[in-house]
Image (cartoon, rainbow, N blue to C red; front, side, top):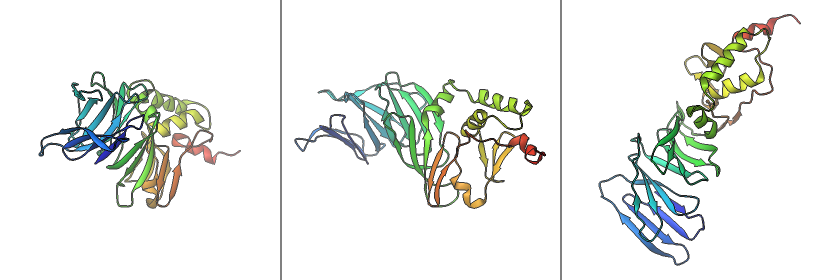
Length: 268
């Protein structure tokens, strides 16, 4: 179900239904094996820590196991708190080796402290995820997932770093919403590019019943039904689909949107 190379490329770990195997790449042989209950959860994902001293395995029931790679190769007991019941389909250690990012098939993304087992942050990706890939610095994540309506599938790029920062309180969404509200009360004909960029990339939501992208009670723009699945979600600046690529960038536009839309019709 999953394989992972060690950082020095000398070792490979593989996970099957109920078995973990460590291989020596140079010697072409098994150097360690761990077998679990046949009726237990299966191993769905694997990842090494940056220094190669540990590796993590994600299970089909949402468990995350941590192992050392010393001679004993023991599981490191951790009080994993608040784990999901969904399969962990991807794991990635951050560069410091102290935190790990996990992705569930349900779209639940979590950042764990691998020293304590605490959840440091989490956010949800809409739709069922089939496969994911994490950038080397763990700032972005690519998801291959089913659409909300029908096939085919889409690839979405997610700004994991800012999504987790928002959950952790470093860039709170209520502050963004307050700034956007203040724009309504200003005398300017347009929203400032900064507030538009933050609002539409962080707190805007797509209303599938009407076709409008909205920020609270403000209709920002409308799309035709055939474009529904290609619309970017919050913290999702880029979408690859069967009909092309969607990139939404509002940073340099003067937009008469929301409650300022009437300014489109003012005489010059």
